[in-house]
Image (cartoon, rainbow, N blue to C red; front, side, top):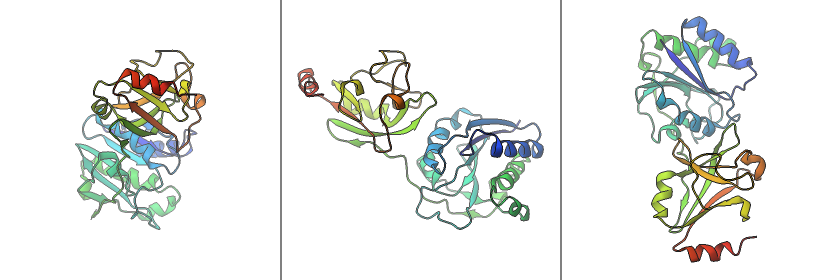
Length: 281
């Protein structure tokens, strides 16, 4: 059985997704379709990166992963006609735009990527070229062809990796990467990095403004620890620090925008921590 995953910004109303799925199951009968998400922010490929990065590895080898997200995260992908590519990485197949997304996804640039050829029929779907180009590629992969048979080898556009937190001796300054359907915010502070800097010292985690309800000094084990009057922090299955509010949505509890930071402050003693907390509003 051929398994195909979809990570797109096509929305959940069914217009684009429905047309794509209908055409794909007609081309490849029996294909197993799995939706990673269709609600990536429009033209925000980094959101697609995070969603797929922590999902694809759980699928069986030779799964075909389709990314249908516009926008770019590279300086060299401003093309009049978008270029679409197919390649194999870590025993999985990937199909999507050549826009810098892949370096962010894997932490390195795939070595052998192949441009997908545009058939004359693709002009019919100029406003939605994925409907022809991606499905044609999936059909050929399902027949046993390899990416090298689908087009000429091209350079994979350089992008940028997911930003690392700013690290100092006694601080980590991070940012939000992703908000799930529950409103919980996943940051770019990894568990390994947190405990490496922590080194068994007391700490406090603050989101945005310096107020008590936006601060915690413990790592929770589940989402229901504490009460709904202040934030909690825990490490999600992704391995990154996650900020939540029990029985509430973080995004409704704290004003958050693209500039909101997460400050983790480490202290050499409890006395130092208590002195610092005494200055809070």
